[in-house]
Image (cartoon, rainbow, N blue to C red; front, side, top):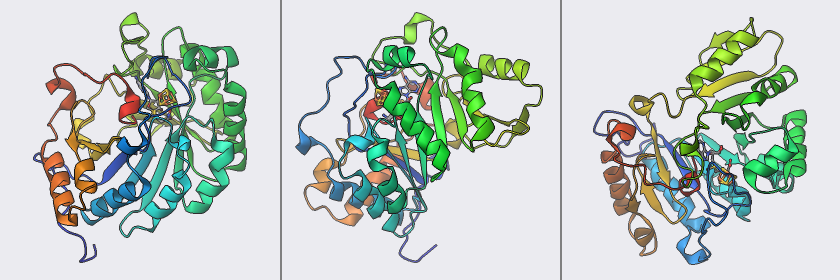
Length: 331
Ligand code: SAM
Ligand code: SF4
């Protein structure tokens, strides 16, 4: 590690933090029922949102603290007109190894070549159904055609490593698992089935739609005799390949399993708060520091404080999730 790097971020339980997820906007062009209500209030006050320069400063400071991995998310990150510049700037920062994006893909046709040119490393594309009517019902917007065209183009051109995020819900899209797996036959894509988490603006979490990782695994095993387990990324608790399929399959048991012991991330909200745990509610306010020309050292200190607040087991220590929507923190 270069001598410009200060001591790395390590929390009270000896977990190193080298990954930041930045929600670059709270706005969204969809209204997924498991994420936000139709009436979800988005900040219309541009001044309360992080500027490009502020985001770049955050990444620069974090890079000196040993963070190597950045993910831009939201809300919908492609609603930010400067998203390409953000990727380009982030890629230039010494110490940053990967810059990834999580998107609903609706606007990808306008941005893909420029994002690739800017050096984006990988895309997580969120799509929960391959049926137009259902897409409309789940997202409350009739945008399936454009999203599907963008997905098909992404898979056909294979210009960038791609993972699909599919949130599974009983009797809503749980019968589409095999259709999604089918995409891995011809394309080098990872299809990731996600468990629903209780951040849905009180819409469907309590309505019995939860579909567990165990059920997904059972279904995969009973349908594919050639299913082979592979070693996946830490949160991809179950990862598989199938003979003759170019892609892979993963299950993210975000609710039924606990990944706290391997947690290496912090999150930044679009209004500039540092969130040290998914289940934490308030966060530490970074925006005032950024807007008062605070020194690199005082911004570093706030990050160190945030990391020192990371709980050993966030899910079980949280009294109530409190969080109404994943869009505040970007998943
Ligand atoms: N708008 C972008 C998108 O949808 O990809 C980025 C933000 S979105 C909050 C990030 C990820 O969180 C998406 O893959 C979405 O499916 C997932 N997500 C949102 N709410 C969720 C919930 N209640 N449970 C599980 N995953 C959720
Ligand atoms: Fe928007 Fe993503 Fe939330 Fe869907 S999951 S409403 S696309 S932020």
